[in-house]
Length: 222
Image (cartoon, rainbow, N blue to C red; front, side, top):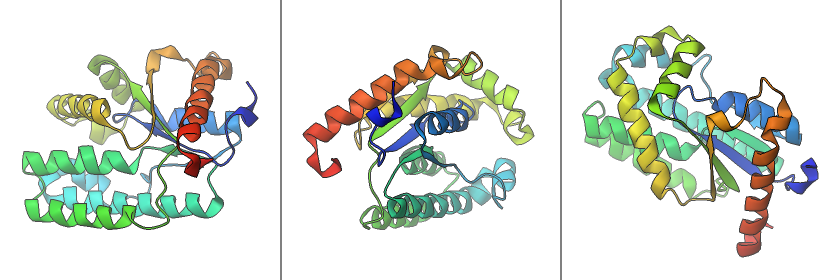
């Protein structure tokens, strides 16, 4: 499979629950296709550790931080003219994390309304282009928890399992109705980068076919 089979202006987003392997796949696909990367801002995040200590106190601050960082990345991808693999989508921030905190009472209704209005304003700007395809990494809960444990971030390991169980369920509900762009669902057991990049061959073929089909239907992305 030649990398030219995937348009060099494409934007491919990798989505999935915490610790599932988004960053690893993002880097591997970018190297394989000769694309740039757009990673979630974790290092230097001033709210992340405090958030895990007190959801109610810091959820709004954390979500606003991620929203701002995500929008800056949207602008960067737009200015480069595409050619990116993106680690986590802006849609997950809004539809899963922020909504979960609002429903659970760890974010006030007023804060959630403010957050949602800001997101709505962002998506109306010319800098916000929908991805050509969203790759959804799926697994059962046990595999997701095992990967969180292997990653070894203490703040995640010490988080109540009920949080991860609820998050996993929300992701499954979210992806079943997501329609902002085409979706390719991939079980994390279907490839093994330890065996080599060739294990991504089926996924790359699927991505190419999905983008080609979508652009035939939507000429604005051609």
